[in-house]
Image: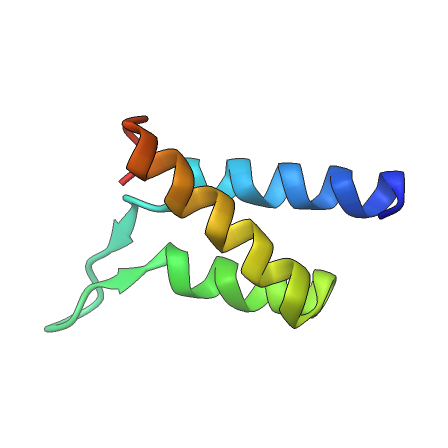
Length: 68
């Protein structure tokens, strides 16, 4: 992996940790920023590397970090 890809992966994973619990109450169903960020990850990194970001995020939660 290149330095650019590793940096984007780390930054987008950090953004997912920060924006994950944030919801926007727009009507009956609140909008989560997690979904929008996952789409952004897919556009910027591609499917495989976006899945890597999600796996890192899930591993951080499984280890016990308060990211959920």
